Amino acid sequence: MVQLHQARFDTSFAALSDATRRGVLEQLGRSDASITDLAETFRMTLTGMKKHISVLEKAGLVTSEKVGRVRTCRLGISRLEQEAEWIEQYRQLWDARFDRLDMVVEELKNREKSDGR
Image 1 (cartoon, helix red, strand yellow):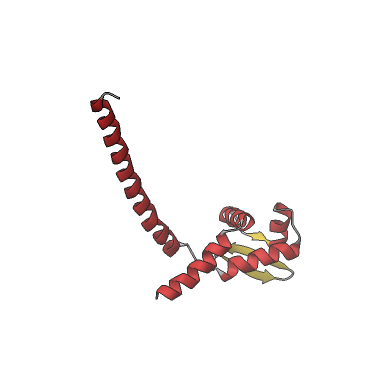
Image 2 (cartoon, helix red, strand yellow):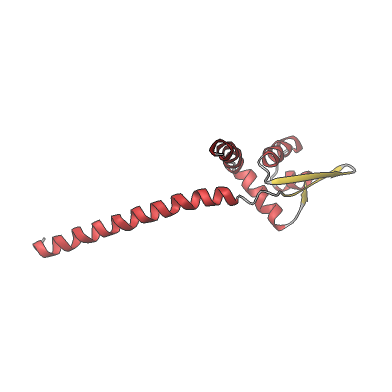
C-alpha cells in the first residue's frame, strides 16, 4: 500500500513540479481547453504542450478527448486528496514544532527580562 502511494505521489508531485503544468491546471480549472489553445496561452509549440499534457494525464490530473481534429483537455479524476492529506500531516507536524519554538523563545525573553538584560 505504501509503495502504491509512493508511486502515485512520485507521479503527482513530478507533474506538479513544473510551473507550466501548474498553470495548465489553473487554466483547466476555469474551463476546458484544446491543446492548441493551451499552447497559445503558454506561448509554446504544440509538441511541447502535448508533452506537458501527457505528464498530467499520467498523473490523473488531466483527461483529454479527441473530437475530429481537436483534442480537448479537462481536469482529470485525481483531486489530489491523498497528496493533500499527506502534506497536511507534515503541515501539522511543522505547526507543532513552530509552536514549541515560539514557547522556547518566549521563555528565553522572559528569562532575559527577569535577569535584567
